[in-house]
Image (cartoon, rainbow, N blue to C red):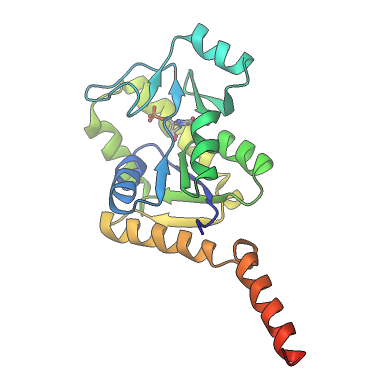
Length: 210
Ligand code: 5GP
């Protein structure tokens, strides 16, 4: 019997290395399906359509909103970002654990719609590392880097709304830690009621001398 899939939200400051952690996690374990978001921001060098994002015009994105094709969407530093509904529903129904790498407004909307979703926040040990990574990445202008840092200040105020904090010091440790959090989640009673009910039934039969 396939186990029930869990919806996992991963947020973190820009530059915390979420993307790398998620690629490693999904590459290592088959149970995970990483949702690819739609966005109106320009592709960075090396990013591919359909792998990193579905790159959309503002009009096309707004049409997706109108058609109800997104589970959630948000505006981040002047661009739209949203999670397409179809893939998430299909993967969950197949028992895969679906990962949404999204920012905090989206995380809040997911929590409303999926109260059992697990919300993880990935951070570096200190803010200096974040700033260095953003600058070193070299893909954003000074202004955008500043806006992303300001956004990180806002997001840091919302960390209490998440279930788990994961520090991305060493990639391997971070990936292992996230996997172990998700495996623990699968042990929750609510995901194991079929087994619980079977054992209950058997015990009832035994107690009747059957
Ligand atoms: P970036 O431009 O660095 O790829 O992403 C900017 C922010 O948007 C990140 O915090 C990322 O997690 C978030 N993001 C990416 N896709 C989605 C999405 O589908 N929905 C929401 N709400 N945020 C997203």
